[in-house]
Length: 223
Image (tube, rainbow, N blue to C red; front, side, top):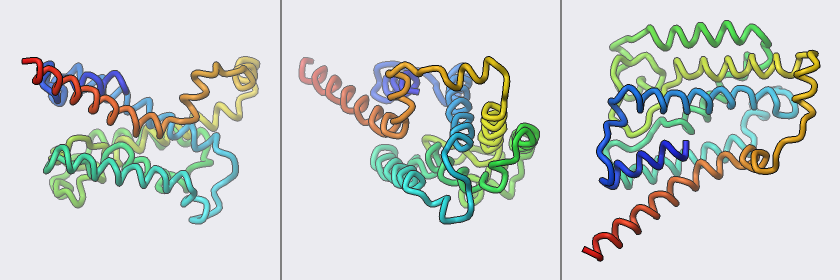
């Protein structure tokens, strides 16, 4: 993700000239990043201590943290991109998805089939009625709305649900390999990244933007 955004920033500041939103290779790279990200969202929901008992458990401090960060992304993107501001990017998706998947959070292996069905529906159903921005976030729009980042609910919710199923299988597996991996120590560097993913997500792009802005100003001054 950081590497992708680094390349994006190179293009944004005019250091490279690529078609990241149209070239199949760039699109595939972004899709792979989003897939891994959302799959792990699903897995993490099965690993979180406690069980979902109702609305009170959904609106935890973590949920509000993600919602707040999504609002910050919208505000910052409006200042930078104007009309192409991010109103339903990946954090906005996660905020909604964590609520939507509550009924199936403990469905076990059935989530693998449900997730596949949701992927198929989100991929194949394109309905003009969902084209307006007020409905396009659901995911059936035949066209992408005017926004710098867009992660519609349908299609991608299937990845989260598959992650739920995989997490349930992982926890329930009694195989020696699974037991050994569950108890294996995690390198400190990876453990730190795992504890602070939201912070890394929110901080890395402002740092990269600031760095490129500084380099651009220095280059302009030098010329």
